[in-house]
Image 1 (tube, rainbow, N blue to C red):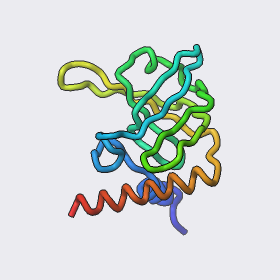
Image 2: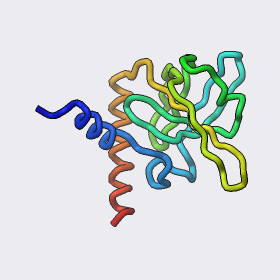
Image 3: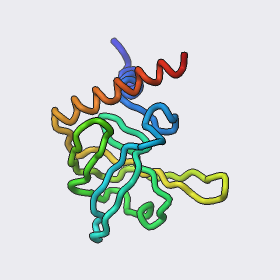
Image 4: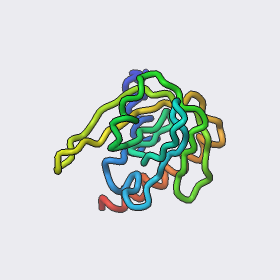
Length: 140
């Protein structure tokens, strides 16, 4: 029997792409999300990380970074290059920041998908697989 931790690591490695590496979620022409904050203000944030469980978004905007953990953003549009746009509900589950070389901060907000329709899951799996193939080619 395989320990559950091993299963999680396999799924996370196989069905996730970490935007910290430029070949995984593109830095040029990045994937992004757009929607409306709870107070009605529109936003557009770049994706940092994408998995079948959720998405991490990056922003230098401290006001957006101060959203309360647990807040739900409804109808967020995920724009993934060369794929159709998907509207999903997201719940904020984590927040961290990186200090930039020139002294500013870049906030990374982790959101989980409240539900992921089968068609969207298939699309994300295909895109993540394509990114992994590209990653392998760049590492050689």
